[in-house]
Length: 215
Image (tube, rainbow, N blue to C red):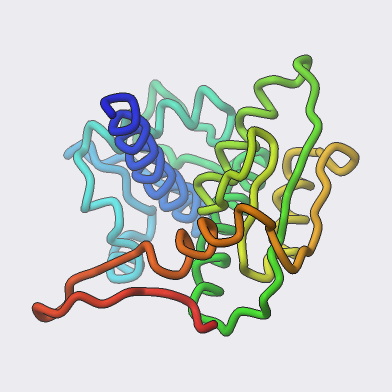
């Protein structure tokens, strides 16, 4: 039970980090960031974009700056550590990372569409030599809300073939990942249907309702 709670907590923290990362990369695409004396990072044309980019204000200064340092170490962004008045620029690798993070928003936009009763099943065979890539790819699928059927098999009911192609391309896994459309998941069908169509319950105006895509 404790391990399960820790996994959920870790996944939530991962998602928060993903949100900060995506916002920072998006700001970089918008013209570069600049450090202010307060410690926050804002776009150079902050006054013009203030209304559009307010996401960073939901997080602490230390968390944002920690994310900036991590992104720099991963070569997603570049900036001069000796002059924080200079802008932060996005690298080619950072642009690719932003595209991957944007996939989650695209997939979320599909959740309210009518289901075509086909499952998108993803399976992969990535050797131990590429363990880091394999783990990162698996982590991305989980963050994209894919359901894990088995260790290397994930499934989702949404028509995300194009988005999956982008994800696979970003990890250079063309010949190691297989995407299938299947009509039935056999013994897993009931559990997976319940996961996607009946699991998310939210209270709104004192009424409990279930968020699900149209069957």
